[in-house]
Structure formats: C-alpha cells, structure tokens
Length: 419
Image (cartoon, rainbow, N blue to C red; front, side, top):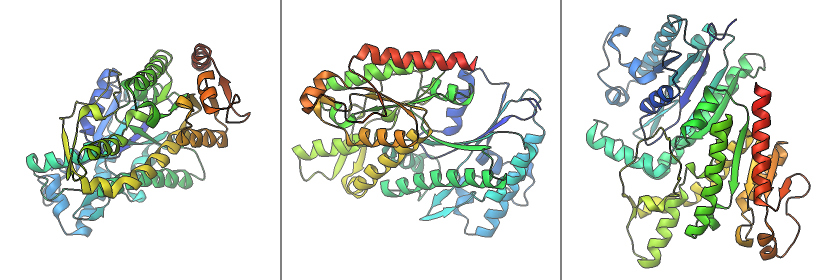
C-alpha cells in the first residue's frame, strides 16, 4: 500500500494558552502541506448541523453545561462515526490526517469524555496500516490560567474559572489519557508498535514540529543544562541561549528534532514570587511580567504573543509549588525517554551540580541513549574534582568547540543515513 492510501494519523490533544486549531493551521501552512493534510477539529464537527442531530448543539459551552451524561456520550460517539465518514471521503492526495481534540473536558469540578478507546475504533479500523501518533501539546499553566479568565469574559464560557492546581490536574489527565490510548491501540493490535505518544511544548520552534511530524525524524536530541543556576545572571542566560540557538539551527538545517526544556517555564512564576516576597512579604497578588520568563531568543514560533502582565493570586501559586517541581521531573523524564541523544551543557554550572541534569543523565543511561557532555575545566576546578561525575557511560568534552562539533557530526551522519 502507498502512503497516500494509508496516511499517518496524528491525534493532537492537551491544553494550552493558545487556539490549537490556529496553531495547527500555521504549522500546515508553513510546512506547505495544505493539500496533503486533512485537519479535523473535533469540536467543530460536534456542533455541525450537517450531522443531522435531533437537537442541534448551538455551541460547546452549552453542550458541556448539559447534565445529561448519557446523551453527551451518545453525541460524542456519533461524532466519531461522522469523522470516520469524512476520512473515508478524503481526497487521494491526503498523506496526513490531523485530529485536533481534547481527550477529556473539565467543567464544574467534573471530568467528561470523549476518552473512551472504543470510540476511536471505527476511525483507526479504516486505516489498518497507518501509523498513529498521539501528541500531547502543553503550555505554561499561568498562560492557560490567563486564557481561561479571558475566555470567560468574552466567549460565553461562564463559570469555567479554574485555579492553577486544577489546571495541573487536567493537563496531567490529558497526558495520561494519551498514554492509555497508545497502549490500547498497541495491545488491540496484538502487541504492535503502531501507536506512539509524545509530549511537546507549543513554544518549540516550527522546525521541531515540522521535522517530527512531516519529516518523521527519529533523531531527537534533548538539551540538558542547569536552568536554576544559569538564570541567576544575564550572562548565564546568554551563554545557555547561545548553546540553545546553535542546536536549534542544527536541527533546522539537518532535520533533527530538538527538545528544549525552557520551552515551558513554570519556574518563572515560582522565582518571580520569591523575588517579590523579598520586597514585600505580605504580597497577595503576583504580577508576572514577560521578563520573568526565560527569554527563548528563537524565532519562527507558531504561537501568538500573550498579553502581559498576568496577575495571579499568591495563594494559588503556593498551592502548586510542590506539584510544579514534581511535574517538571516527570515531564523531563518523558522527553528524555523519547529522545535518542542527550546533549548536556555544563552540568556543574559554576561548580554547582544540577540535580535535575544528573537525574536526566542517569535516566538516559538506563534507556541506552547516547549522552554527550560538555564539562569544562573551570567547572571541574570549582567543583573540587578533575574527573567527570557520570562514570564511563557518557562521551565527555572539556572543550566547547569539540563538544559542538561532535553533536553536529552526529546530526549530519544521521541525515545521510536517512537519505
């Protein structure tokens, strides 16, 4: 069978501070894939009059406000059948099918489907030889919080205000449902690896998504560096950004996927609160500004700029402090698990070991991934040791130029293999 007969199916899920539909349209347009992608937005199809429902649904808020759970499940189920019909009638030029949806809804302190694996069966059975990707898109919780507040005031989503802790829980559930859907598909197909699941921040540059989705690159580098120590000074941030920008340029040129941990930066909120409290211990509301966030310093994003500042009740930030740290660890592990290489930049930044970087190296070693480390003499001297801290399971460089050249060589070699 040809790729045209069996296009790749990508389910985009997750919650973010942007319109996912707009995000995906930009991704498709920039990649010049307009005629090859069938983009299906689950919520748009849900309220279409052409579906012939006995009682048309005027809008999504009205649908979610219904207390008739059985009816909502019935409508969800029929929407999957409707989408299957659209897929059957697709043009022969289609090589990618994008299904944009939530795997859960959260309203009035209750979760709703559509996540019931059986609902997907009709769609996936249409294309038995197609690969299935599930991509959970994530964003900073303070941006999602701001979007929900703004939307309630302008778009009819009344009584939908969520606190930061609820947003964290909802985001975790979306990822968990993505994992469960992947496992269901692979188990149903007798232990196949037909389905994969990835998590990715929407603030990665366009090329990361393009290489992952359209180039189908399986060469993925996770950038690992000491965020908390380097962000203490503008000099430290600039040094890390120089490394990040160089790696993103390599990814763009040689079609590699670059995972960048500061593409999501919830610690910005934690650090901003700490700084504000040093000036006013009785602060009740945090005014989070754009310069509190790590400056990505890379272009070609598929996201719109958000409106700053964001004013958040301090009590909500206090409630999620430990949860944020736990999620950072689990999220970074998830990215390390799907990476083929770990590029570690100065794990002992200024002689201080990053516990997070240390854990990521050990995780990558457990996965048999290649770990390449830049550990300069200056950090070794401050550390008080002249040996690197990660045993013999890494490739270590004391010279930055050699470290960068080695990474570039690996990327080029992989590109040649693909050809």
